[in-house]
Image (cartoon, rainbow, N blue to C red; front, side):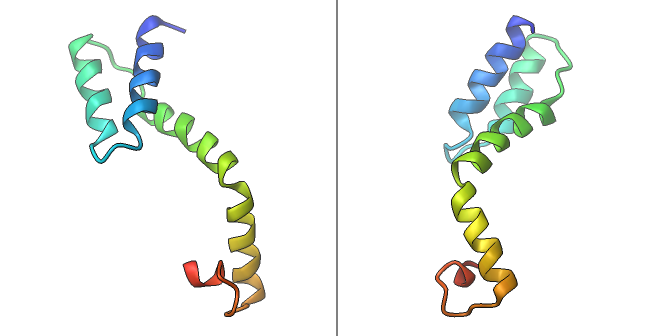
Length: 78
């Protein structure tokens, strides 16, 4: 793992939840460092912890959807 990949990962983690484009930051930094890093892998890297963190809610939403329980609060999210 190169230092640039670590820097891009840190920038992605910090800017993902801000109301600004984290993709733009990654593109700008990769242009500054004259690198062709795959930016999709940075997005997948942040998606995995989000899924792990919200796994219980995601499971409840899926169960409510397939049970078609309209009174369930998780069904109303659809």
